[in-house]
Length: 361
Image (tube, rainbow, N blue to C red; front, side, top):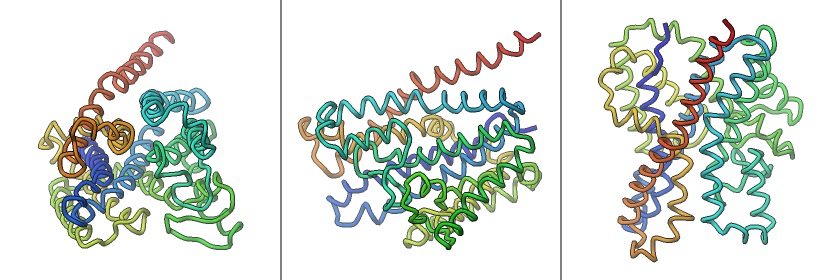
């Protein structure tokens, strides 16, 4: 029987969001001591790769429990929409007002960026794996273009028979066959391919191989969970130590399955296998960090833009003070978002799911 929560995975999810946050705030430490923030947190952006691996793992387990056919597909997509859209659009609206609001419409590039954010669509074909203005308003959401695409495909393929097989076939075609046909090449580089079409660049980008690796873990879960959890716990500690050492030396700190991805894949595999042993020892604050990870991911960049612009007026100078304040405010606002936006919508979905079987009796 699968556990209702993988505490080790939940903790890793929280740490992934924390690492991305520290990466984006590192510039404050560079002011204090040239290159200090880069030395400590230049690896932080790779938390995205861990997010993608975890998504592939969790979504595979969720899809396996879904009812076959159209109804199962709709329920799956409805649950995923409830999971991400309310918090996403509310925080996007706040970002819009804090980042210039109506003045945005005087700049065509900012309008394009806003439309892209509203529709989860890539708009540029020459800056993979982002395909949006990742330095502009809400640039962090480039990863959600991949997430939403992945959810849609997995959900829609639930309609078809042999849904597991069709899923593997679809991603094999888009990640291998299509690039070979269009550009006569194949790569694992996150830069991807230059097809000239942003949407096509995104669906063929090797970043999606991280989801696929997570899917393999989901399919292999019965085997992984049967391994000796104490041995897997030791391997988890060893893999974390090796990964930390490599990151400290600037190795494998880029996006992609052949860079940070394979390291995170080993860590995630060990964490899943070690769940029976480590689950009872993981501190509650790490579980809560995992709970708020999505909101933390969405909110934290406001400390560099919308909210951050007000820091100087409050007497907070760039540097250590702003770094600490940005971290504290990001965590606090992420908790508020989870408590009053994410959690209510998730609880509503669970209540609806519980009522449906009763209505069918």
